[in-house]
Length: 101
Image (cartoon, rainbow, N blue to C red; front, top):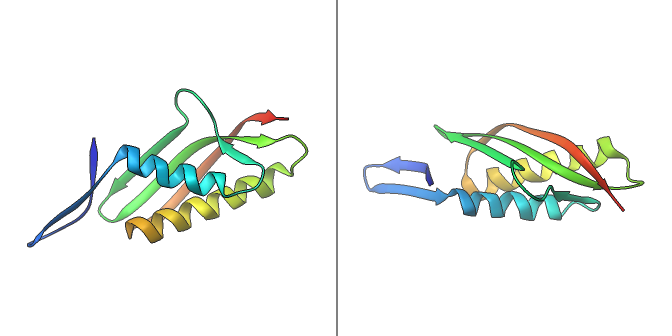
């Protein structure tokens, strides 16, 4: 499935969900102590009318301050989507579902 990033008289720009997932995964992995949860239902993205909202599940390294890691993930994901897709990011909802050693 593809999502339309922009549509103008000269054509449109689309991005696949797989590419969006790669953008988010790279942003999450850039945060020390965080990774996307493995398996089903780890990431949901809404992208419409130049606006984006992400909902993701992450694993946090045991011993890390969970709120700080989650906030850093929110910032990185929002910045990455905004910069790479030229969208206004309304929200990045993060659920910490696993602690890993």
